[in-house]
Amino acid sequence: MRRLKCVVAYDGTDFSGFQVQPDQVTVQGEIEAALQRITGEEIQISGSGRTDAGVHARGQVIHFDTASHIPLEKWGFVLNNQLPDAIVIRSVEEVEPTFHARFDVQVKEYRYCIDNRPVADVFRHRYADHIRFPLDVEAMQRAARHLVGEHDFTSFCSAKTYVEDKVRTVYGLTVERTGDEVWVTCRGNGFLYNMVRIIVGTLVEVGQGKRQADELMDILAACDRERAGKTAPAKGLTMWEVVY
Amino acid sequence: MRRLKCVVAYDGTDFSGFQVQPDQVTVQGEIEAALQRITGEEIQISGSGRTDAGVHARGQVIHFDTASHIPLEKWGFVLNNQLPDAIVIRSVEEVEPTFHARFDVQVKEYRYCIDNRPVADVFRHRYADHIRFPLDVEAMQRAARHLVGEHDFTSFCSAKTYVEDKVRTVYGLTVERTGDEVWVTCRGNGFLYNMVRIIVGTLVEVGQGKRQADELMDILAACDRERAGKTAPAKGLTMWEVVY
Image (cartoon, rainbow over all chains, first blue to last red; front, side, top):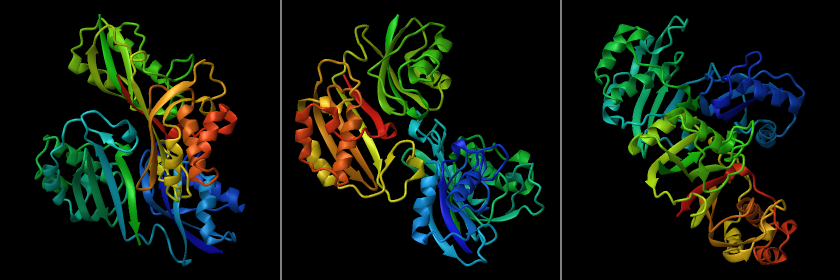
C-alpha cells in the first residue's frame, strides 16, 4: 500500500459539492468511481475540506491509499482519462503514510471573483458573480483590514454551524481590481461554514456604499450572523491553494 | 415599428445551437421567448448566421422589429434580465429598416482556442479543446498561409453541405500562441458548414507533425472532404465578430 496526494481542480457548477452524498453527483464520488475503475479497489479519498455546491477548486488536495502498481508519473494521465472534463488532477505525488489531507492543513487560500463589467462577460458566468455597478475597491480594502488576525468569526458563519470554537485566524484578506474583475483573496488557518462567502458579501455591501468600512469592527464584535451582509453566491468562489 | 440590432455573446455549451428547433433549447429560442415576455409581441429574430451546438459567440449579431416603446438605452438591461446567464446582450442600437443581420455581413471572424497545457485548465474546459502535446505553431502558420485568398473550399466543408457554390474568400488565417493557449483566427466573407472546424482540425494535424504544411495546397486542390483533417470539436470555436 502507498499513500498518494493529488492536487485537484474542478468546475463546481454542475456538482452537488465536493463530499459524497447519496444520489448526487459529487466531486468525491466521481474521483472514487474513477479510482475503482482503474484499480478495482474500493478507495475512499480524503479531501482538505468540503466545498459547497457550485464552489470551484484550483488547488483542492486529496489523499488516498492504494495497492496499485501504476507508476507515479502515469497516475495523473490515467485518472484524468477516467474523469469528466470538469475535474482535473493537476499533480500526483507519493507521501508518507502519516500525511493527512485534512488534518495537516497549515494554510488555506480562497479567492472570490466579481465580474464588475457593466455588461457581464458570458465566458465568466460560471466562475464570477456579476455586479454591474463599479465597486469602491478602496473602501473594501479598508473594511477588509478589520478582519485580519485572530477573531471569533461567529458573525461571519452560517447560523447552521454547530462547531463550538468559532475563533479562526485570517492571515490575509485583500481586495484587488484586475481589469474589469474584482478579486477578494482570503488566507487563513481554517474557515467556518460559508465564512468566505459571508465576508465577501459584506465587503461587497461596503463597496456598494451600503455600509461603512469601519462597521466591520462592530459586526465582528457582535458575534451575530444577522449583523453581517448577505452570503455571496457560490459560483464566484474558488478554493485556490492548500499549504501543508 | 423600429428595427434593433444587437450584439450577442453566449456560452454555447448547453444549447442545441443558435437556430430554433422544435423541443430543443436554442439561443434563438431563448431570445425570442424573452422578447415575447418583455413586449407581448411574437418577434422573430434574424442572426448573422447559425452556430452549431456547443459553439460560442462573443459577437453574434441579430436584428428584430418591435413596436415596443422601451427606450433604447434600457433594452440591453431589460433583455439580460430575462435571459439565462449563458446569453448576454452586449449592445443594442436602432438601425435602418433595410438593415439585415445576415444579408449585410461583410466580414466574419471566428476564433478557435486550443488549451495546449500538459494538464488541462479546468476553467477553460467548455471554451477550449485540450491538446496536451505542444503544437508546432510555426508549421501551422506556414500551412495556414495556403488557405488565405479566394478558393473552392469543398475539401474543408462537411460532405453534408448542399450549397452549390463552395468558393469563399479567407481574408486572414493566423495561428498564435498566447501563453499556454494556441488561438486560430479566421476572417472571411462567409464560411461553409463546419469550414472553420475542419480548417482547425487540419492545421492541428500539421502542428502535431502528422502532415506537412505544404500538403494544404494539395488538399485544397483535391476538392474532396476526405483529404482534409478531422473536424475540430465545437467547444473551442467562438463567433468572434461580424462586420457590416
